[in-house]
Length: 133
Image (cartoon, rainbow, N blue to C red; front, side):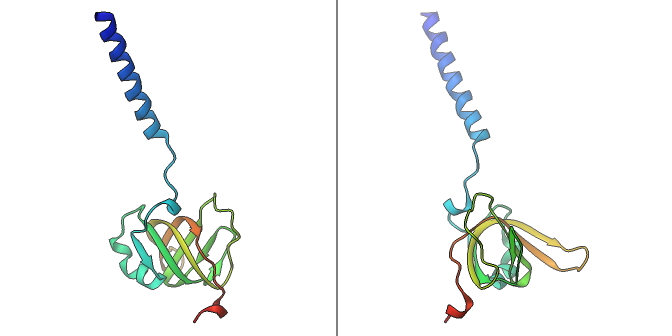
């Protein structure tokens, strides 16, 4: 009888350890899979950014001010860095809709600008500025 109790206790302990390790090492969900805590343009995001928590999912729709290979800059100092798994070709101009994780506010040491960072972003829908109404 004691042998059965030890076997059951061992199985339960192994199951708990396995589940704990799975939760610890699993990859975090992508922004695409989560509901945004904020939806709006770069101006409204800049106004509300102080109330966000690091890691909140945000959906931002605005016109691209400048673009680099892995990031775009929107108005009001919003910088969006693309997720490495997003294989779409991001536009370098026009109106875009992106969804990513809020990463915080920082002050640019050189220019003194306030920057709002969004990382792990996915392109939802690129739109040419001439098609806007």
